Image (tube, helix red, strand yellow):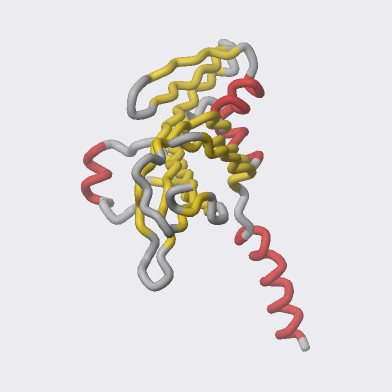
Length: 183
């Protein structure tokens, strides 16, 4: 009986650690003409937010990809976009900025408050992906992958500890079938 209580206590202590604190809260898309427009929102936990507020530079990378669904083969990558958001916060000086980059441009945006900066940094809106040239009778879906990159260690340590992962977390979410080829 004591062993059972010990197992239940251990499970109760470890269970909250297994729950994912970061999640993709929304993937919204609309198909019009030969393109698709996607918006993605990320939700992070309070510990990540407090680290950013204390001045830790944080980088989030959003991958918005279109895949073709196959029945017997693994899903096939068709095309996608990558958006990187790097957050710089200095609460003492009241300086909050986000550097956003994608394949075509780099944007540096400054904010008056921490909340507005965080809200903008964790929401990627209206990413357009060209959908022309899709095959008939095929099914397509969107896969959103978000990574949080750790601060880079000094190069010497990186060479020695090459097996250590450089990401805090990596999460992904797939939509339902969004498009059947040619439509």
